[in-house]
Image 1 (spheres, one colour):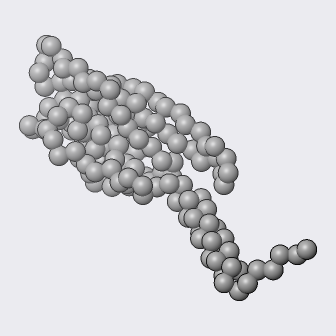
Image 2: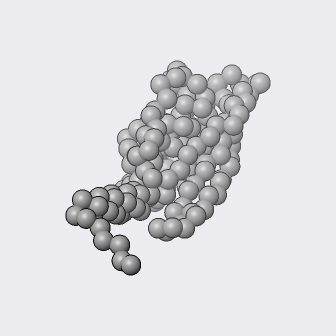
Length: 157
């Protein structure tokens, strides 16, 4: 006994298969980017330049990224042959930054340490599980001209 499908059933099957294929292709190409777009922090807190530099580098917004660093760091970079802001584009690896702790310097109210974790997400292919890894660190920030600025070169390099 064979099962015969009418024309309407075949059309429904074809549409469902086409939608599933489009969803798989879209998820594979975008790797999940665009699900949540990070926005810059507008607050005047020690963690703001750390977070904003991270977001700016993710977006490829080199002007905003550069504005998060202190004049001392920018001068040190200018004295080197390597400019980390020249031609750096966005990275395709989805990332997230978590600020863990902010510690004020008890001897200098214009200096603080910001502890952070950067979570990285890699795709595992079409049906793979993907992988996740984290990097942690501490960034020094200083108050310069009334704003908090990153005072370390090795923050995202």
